[in-house]
Structure formats: structure tokens, C-alpha cells
Length: 260
Ligand code: GLP
Image (cartoon, rainbow, N blue to C red; front, side, top):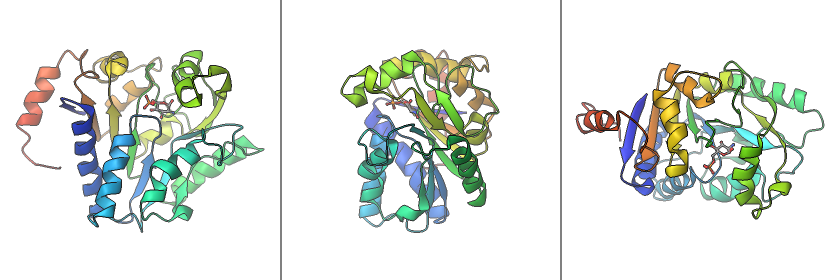
């Protein structure tokens, strides 16, 4: 894991966007794995700006989102489909038909999940996966004790995640669906490269566990320690519980090859 710590989330998001933009330039046909939540908003804003200026194009790219709530339609403003359109897709030149989000309103979620896995494989697999992390260490919606080899499937959210995500539902936890469709941890681990973003004090414990703790299904993100190429972009608050923060900064300041 490459741990990259910036003083604030704005600088971290800008650096992550430079890295992602470099990957898009290198392969205009890139298959992106995309995340939702508050954390990637700054990254998306920066990428939108680069697209607007003509620095990068998503015209040939395609995307697969990590997860979606069950039982709410793509037009519902709390759906991740809606989030992606409003916060990213409507502002860039990606073709909507090349974007994919698990079908949370499918009448047959088992088949929908199988089809999602096939679609990812059919596209040649995800080249660059963007991830955030839940305060309990979840990635996608893979809650603690999810199989580290799991595939896209339906999951039941923990009360903690329902409480955390209530802020997107006007603070009303009873409005947050209990069930979701999510790429599995095995699915996520097959992506070639991963960019993980985490900002704020509330993520500090999960981040410390992910980077410096034991690999355990109790903290799903810790499995990223076994992935070949993960870049973790943090602000100081999210990095505040890392024992080796000084070392990561030392390495970054002596980076032999500039990637962004
Ligand atoms: C949700 C999403 C995750 C996201 C996490 C953190 O549970 N399914 O993909 O990483 O929340 O969200 P936030 O960035 O809003 O803290």
C-alpha cells in the first residue's frame, strides 16, 4: 500500500484526481470502478474540471459502481444511480450506456448480481477502482465478517452503517434501506489498481486498522494489504491514528518517480 497524506482533504482529492486523470490519459478505454458517499465528491469535482478543460476525456471509458440500495428506483434522489448522474456523469463526456450500477430495484436480485459480475468480466475487468471506507472498515457495502472472497450479492446493512448513512436521507435512519447490492470483496480485489480515499477523524480508526492492523474479515478494508497496487489518499485527520505516519511522509517526500 502506498499511503499518501495531505494536510487537508482538498489537496488529497486534487492529488487523487491527478493520478486518476493520468490513468485515463494512458488508457482512454479504461474501465473504472466508482464509489459513492461524501468522500469521492472532491475527486469527482476535480475530474469534471479536467474534462471541461479538455485535459481528459471519458468518451471511450466505461464504469461499474460498487453498490446500490435495494428497493429504491434509479430516479429516487437517494439512489446511488441518481448520485452518480448528479455528481459526475451529467458533467462529463462519458456515455451513459457505458456506465453500470447494480440494479437495486430488480425483482430477482440474485440474477441481477450474477449479470453484474458477467458484465464486469465482459468489459475485461475493472482497471482502476475508486474506494471509500466506512467507519467500521467496510468497502462497497461489505460489512464486517463479509467473506474476503465474496462476489456481487445482496447484503444486509449493520445498524452502524444505517445510522452513518441516515445523513443522506434527511437524518431519518428509518428511511435507509436495510438491503443493498454490492460488489464482493473478491470482485473488488480483482481490479488492477485501487485508489482509496478517506477523510476526517471519524475514519481514523478504520484507516489505522486497514493499513497497520491484521488482515481480518472484521475490518474488510484490511484485505487491501494483499492487493498489488493500492494508493491511499488521506487527510491529516484520517491519518491521525497511524503509527508510521512519519515514515509514509518520508517516503512520499523522496518519491523517485512522480505519478501526479
Ligand atoms: C457507504 C458506501 C461506501 C462508502 C462509505 C463511506 O456505505 N457504500 O462505498 O465508502 O459509505 O461513505 P462516506 O464517504 O460518505 O463517509
